[in-house]
Every structure is written in C-alpha cells, then in structure tokens.
Image (spheres, helix red, strand yellow):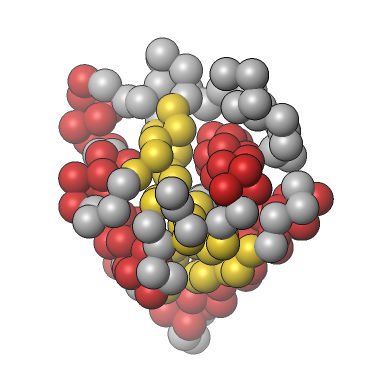
Length: 170
C-alpha cells in the first residue's frame, strides 16, 4: 500500500506521537521512512533585535541556532526509529514556511504518504496561528495521515517511543 512514508516533526510532544504512528505503520508495511523537519525563514523582527544587540551576522546567527535545533530534533527521531527497528533517512528543509517545507520534503523523498501532527486548534487561535496540517492536507498530491492532539487542541501525553504493537488489535 504505502512504500515511502514521510513523517514531519517539529520537536514537540505531539510530533513525537505522529512519529510513533508513522513508524508503527512503516514497520507493519515494511515501508521506507524519511523523517523531516522544517526551518522557517529567519524572522525579521528577531534578526533586527539581534543586530541591535550587536550580533555581527544576525542572519547567520539565526541559521546556526535553527540548524542546531533541527539536528537535535532529527537525531532524537532517528534514535526513536532505530529503537523501533525501523530504518529511516533524515531531511532538514531550510528556509520554508512549514507546510511548504513538508510538501517539498515529500516531493524530494518521493513519499506516497505524509504523516503530520495537528494541534486541533479551533476558532480564533486557528485563525491567528493557522494550521500547517490542514495546509499540507489541502495542497498535497499524496494521502496525509493527521495525528491529532486532544479535543481542547492541546498536546496529549504520549511516550516518545513508538509502541510496535500499535494498531494490531485496533
């Protein structure tokens, strides 16, 4: 059914839940997995504040911090995949809006399924904060599995490690 699964993560606890679902599905299907994280474009206000504080290369400073965070997120996810017995590739998509980056990662990895997390925001918070998951689902040319938080839109508590038996008795 699915041979190449892209799991998009951002380092949040909810993204860990999406990773667990993606890895369990990949293991059951013997599918390839690419774990991707996206670094947004540098924020002008933050870069300007860094320049005001005397940082000589505020864009470079931002990029180095974002790159370090992405490496930590991907290393943790790769460890999780290894512990679950699933081989995975890593991808860091830089300088993109998160939804655009996820779609680019899916294209580059030739994914036939994308797994993303959604905070399940509603009302004004959704209007103000948007929904990366909805944008990915709307614009994707491949199926999207959305792993949701609880009904209040907050992150659910979950283990960072996937349960290999997930879905067997469902």
